[in-house]
Length: 257
Image (cartoon, rainbow, N blue to C red; front, side):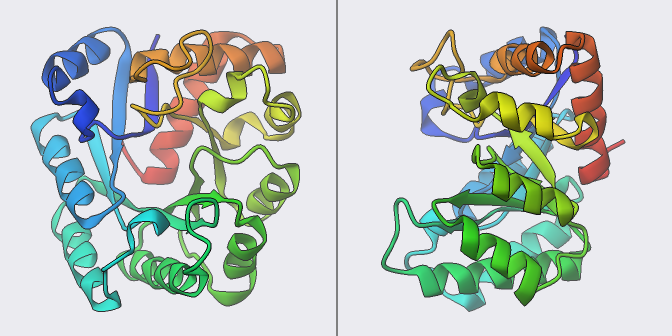
């Protein structure tokens, strides 16, 4: 197995007791590269710290829609500086809209989303999008309110065919995570078959969203194999084809050599 986990959170406190040993074990067992995803100012700093410690870990930095409380738009200058000053920051993210957890601050979420896309454009970086129960507004922003120069990735992409269609039309990649393996994921096979292999990334979103058959446990990058297997099975291709394609796709969108 040689795979690229395009989105994980190894700064999370759930890894505090065994972080270094686990990361080494994962890497020794075929997870060749990992992107540690920022989601807040502090989370972005921790992601960058991990990228400096391990040559096979890269970072994103951004403020997610669930972490904008108390943050001012001018504070985004710190995100800009972090991304500009650290060469292993490969994208602005995760950013976007989340109306599942936060319905009262939609205006602020949209403002932060747009402002961070502007940062990405200034830095010539792609974006990593988090969207939950906000599909129409997410697509409207990307289609009608701002052009995202380097495009990017819909992380842990919702299994909604209309969203996927619009995302692909706009030139985005689709990142698939544990939910595609869940027995109650009604649209998983349709989505997997619809997205071309050259537009798919794989991720764990560790420590969250562990795939079947380990659902409910602390997730880690070694579980990518279950996501890869599901894609291969559904598309009726070899596991090695999925590993090769998703690895190269991740390197391509994030310009990693």
